[in-house]
Image 1 (cartoon, rainbow, N blue to C red):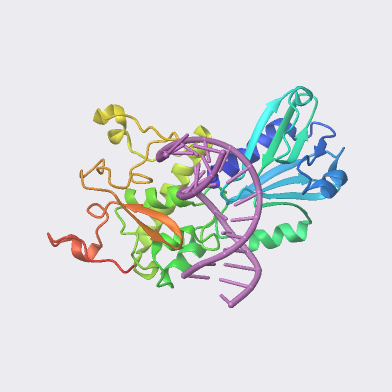
Image 2 (cartoon, rainbow, N blue to C red; image 1 turned 135 degrees about the vertical axis):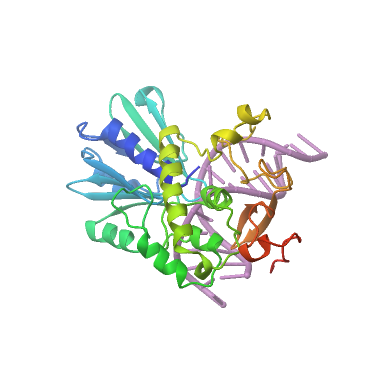
Length: 286
DNA sequence: GTAGGATGCTAAC
DNA sequence: TTAGCCTCCTACG
């Protein structure tokens, strides 16, 4: 379930359980990380950090474990490693005598150097969850681009950490048509998007799930049934195709955009130019 | 039991 | 633009 909030939460969870806890048992039951695991076995993890969807576990003497979960990767924490042997799909297990963590199905799990880590940071855009990150370079790219804002928000070189859920939800919250070209996004709109992502994603880290509905649109406030779905959080449009919009009652739509599912409300997120007209939204390019 | 999809990304055409 | 990667879960027989 990896958008940026998940990865920042994982970094904090790794620090809490394993940072400066003495030598770790490092193994790769599945085998694909065995050589590096052997190098790391018995070392101490001294830090863990996240940038966008990338997780870095720091081992002062040996380097960094670079982890990217991709679409399927999963992390499970547990206690009493000895009593819970890993299954053969576990790529990486870190363990103390009290706690363990298992990594399965990542796109990336590799031992890298400081220089390689730096190169990864340099190709990522600012991350709303990194307090020191500046949203200005992201806007500079957006305002130069004819690509749709929906695609730009998913481009990790532009902004790091936003995934398919946050992109759909933040555009809805600001009534922005997802097909708006980047160059038509006004500075005030970008500031509002960034500030909102900072708030939403921080809440995502805290609760370990994505909630985006405002207080007046919660199930309790509206007297509607809560969402029944594997993500847990309350949302406006993500995976709600054909269901009624919580605000206007119109039908939520879905479309393919850059090989991902886009969700939006065509009434609430009408292009600015046609919002004055009482007509249906303009036809979309395929 | 099996197919298909999923909050991601890259390399190759 | 497409195929490929990696795993888990759900829906459907």
